[in-house]
Image (tube, rainbow, N blue to C red; front, side, top):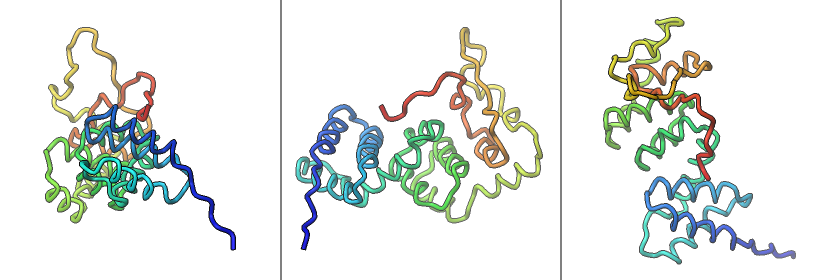
Length: 204
């Protein structure tokens, strides 16, 4: 009977140490760790990473196999979505997990991320909003507005760059359909997310 060759996770462990050393903020740590795990082809990478972190850093919490899988899912969800990533990185991990594990489209995730930040929702409040599908109320409003540009409904002082000398030009992404309009309803989506500047690697 052939024995399975042990997997060498030395490089992964080194990446985990780098993530902890370079990132003191929890979300920065989790994003970097999620990327390191997600880029490994082995299904057991999350479990291996969790075991290493608990053994090498017993003083740290939050590194169970389940949470490492969530970090991997976080990278897989937002690694190629820099607009959403900017929102997610400003949101606490507990709220991110609730949004990530709900059955939502990208635009709907954006809605809940924006709402959580705008209104300072707690875990309990966000859970209630998800259970009652709060975003559907906004979707009905959006669909009733046809092709109206929702960005014009924002209050005049909603743009922190307004009238600032040398302020960069911002635009609403041309791809916003009714679903992405949903994310912009009630002024939730901040204009700076749609900067015309070139993309930046969210996971350097």
